[in-house]
Length: 142
Image 1 (cartoon, helix red, strand yellow):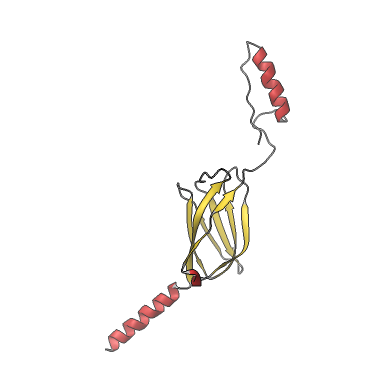
Image 2: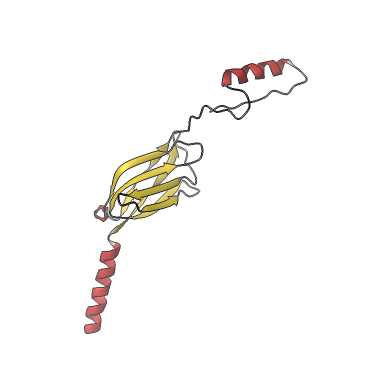
């Protein structure tokens, strides 16, 4: 009988300890609704503890957090970083929280060629089309 009481006590403590955690999950999208693979997700608690994960090949992330208030940052290559301040996590919310985010394309104003701006690129492309000896140069500016 004592063994059963101890077992119930240990099981109760285990359940209580796990109830202090909640899982935050969701999708990371671009503005067109496409899922973003391998986006970084970083949750930083008020006391400075950091939890990190990445979205998978389907754009889904999942991160286990303890009760508290967080600053949550989402980032991916060629996208602007998106931060949510004061996000409250509580196990009272049935242990699973859903948070989908949309990242905007990063506007850098930089080009991948020597030309300074897109107007110059367009002029260069037009000039090169007229010449039969030169291949047209394509310059992409973000």
